[in-house]
Structure formats: C-alpha cells, structure tokens
Image 1 (cartoon, rainbow, N blue to C red):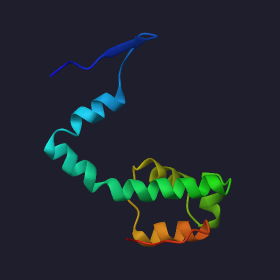
Image 2 (image 1 turned 60 degrees about the horizontal axis):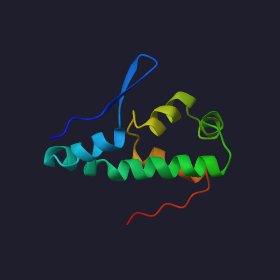
Image 3 (image 1 turned 45 degrees about the horizontal axis):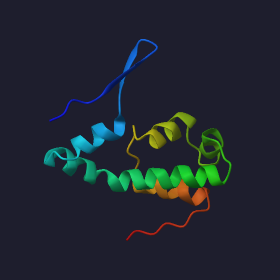
Length: 101
C-alpha cells in the first residue's frame, strides 16, 4: 500500500484526512464501526444545522433547554452520547420536527 503523503507546515506534520479515511474504510472492522455511528452523526449534524439556522449560540440553546453550555458542546462534538429524550427536547426547543425512517 502506498504511504500517506505527509505535509509539513510551521514545524507540524499533517496527513490528508480524506485519504486517510478512504484507506481506513477499506478495512472491514473499521467500516463496520464507522457505519454504526452514522445515525448518531446525522442527528448531531441536524441539531447543529437547526441551531445555526435559528442563529442561536450553544449558550442560548443551553439556557432555554435548562442544560449547561458545555453539555451542548460535548453533544455537538460527538464526545457525549445523549439519550433520545435529550435530543428530542433540544430539537423541540429549536422548533424542529423529528422523524425516524
């Protein structure tokens, strides 16, 4: 397999994320885990998109949903896995309709 191209800038080394992801997805074990997280990432992206459409900050969403801003940040970064009830509450506060297919 061809080596990943490494780019150096300001003393730091970088690899192309898209190329790294493309290679990783060729491994069946990685692809299985990646696919398992897709629904979670779709929900997070929808939540962020709706919040931004409403021109609302994380702090504002946290205030109306009676949560801490840091909890919203963890959720949006994927570092926390909230319950469906929390996600539905946040989406309702943003005026979003939820449908699961």
